[in-house]
Length: 73
Image (cartoon, one colour):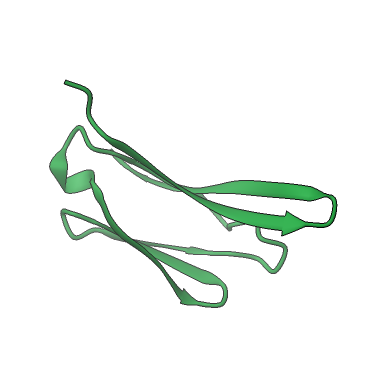
């Protein structure tokens, strides 16, 4: 059986092309690590919640780059 994987990215579509940054990786080997929700909680903040209740937040700079990449599993 193949376990699900979830990836969260921030995309910036500019005049010279698209840029993409990884924000989070979630591995479903353990059901508690499944990504349940990813929402913008402000103009520069993303909150990701796992099935097990872990809450991970990432701040995004004005240029689109996240301050870190989070993972579960």
